[in-house]
Image 1: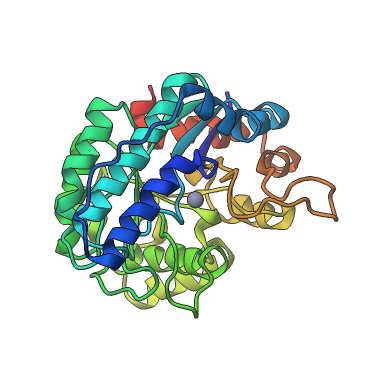
Image 2: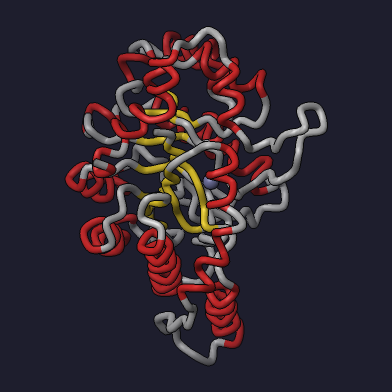
Length: 334
Ligand SMILES: [Zn+2]
């Protein structure tokens, strides 16, 4: 079985965005308080939204199941306040649930959290519990920078985050470290802000004792781990200079990297540098990069092709990447 641990509902019906637009219009005009979404979307609209996109690509590329979450750039935690973020998260997560209910063999849900800059992450616990306990989701996306490019909240190792980490440990769910849109013009969202956040989160883990306090907590750093695998020697050396334990002891029971790297040489490097047990198959389709690579004739995000092409991993190691590691990190998938 091939499990893609990183897919977003980037093709959701426009009624979802209409609701978001109405939230934003309300904020701008200051004339109506936030209201819970009442989105009228038929099952056929949901089917249409995935059948020619995610489902078609699953079958063309030979993957089976996608761990599916709301559109990441749309999370927009910087917009409005905690109530706006809560209502928007509920609307987005409910839409994921609709997809999962229609295609339970193809999708399983991961939730967006109602984070808001300056608001303690403990605030997200009720929606996390609703999604895991009531909707049957198996994980969450955690935005390390709800301000959208200005990093105004404390780092992931700060006690600020601890109530959320405690709840995730208790529920036995991992978090994918995933920022949203960038409102800082210095950082393009998918090209810079995402990579920066992936790399920054890793360094926050390296410099802290977070996993001593939360030995069962697991994070996926997506997009191939940002700059981390490429600079693995730098991180090992920094840890050594700082008197930190070796990286495998320090964090490799807790931190995992996905395969959203869109060329063969990148996947080759990832699989040579990072232990196989820490690599989870993912494509992020339909996502950040949608075109066809003229050098190969295939979509950049057809990442299964790159893993298939590696000749130094045997079939059982590839099965770890495609399935076993994903099941290990997402125990509720069982
Ligand atoms: Zn993503």
